[in-house]
Length: 140
Image 1 (cartoon, rainbow, N blue to C red):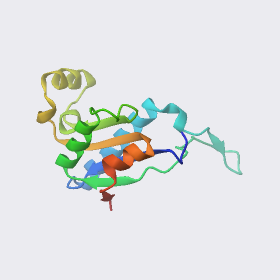
Image 2: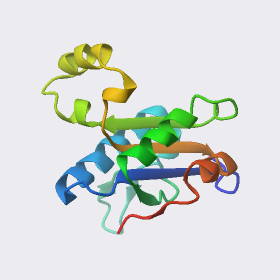
Image 3: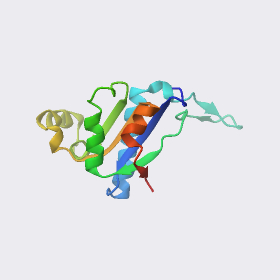
Image 4: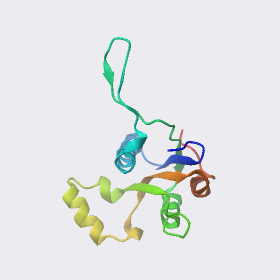
């Protein structure tokens, strides 16, 4: 990933309890790692020779928005000009499932309008990411 021309951000629903917000960020990070495995650096050793797993090679700002703002971002991704943006979202439907098979079944029966978005991670051309998220504040 070229840090000058590309960018990744995470947007978390600002009204989530802290534990659910942290869980959402963790799940979105795993989804990003699956979609973009090349962004994780090589494992490294410390001065004592202990091995530490590779971490992502660039920062990912965590931004905040309401569910409706995340929904609008999600909807804009299907418009022309955003095909290059890699995205993964996490919703109340996914969070409420005990197994992946249950998630598959429930998401197949749900419409986008039925979902309450907890978060979304976006990675792609910086200009496109800025168009989608440039008005959002950092999550604090």
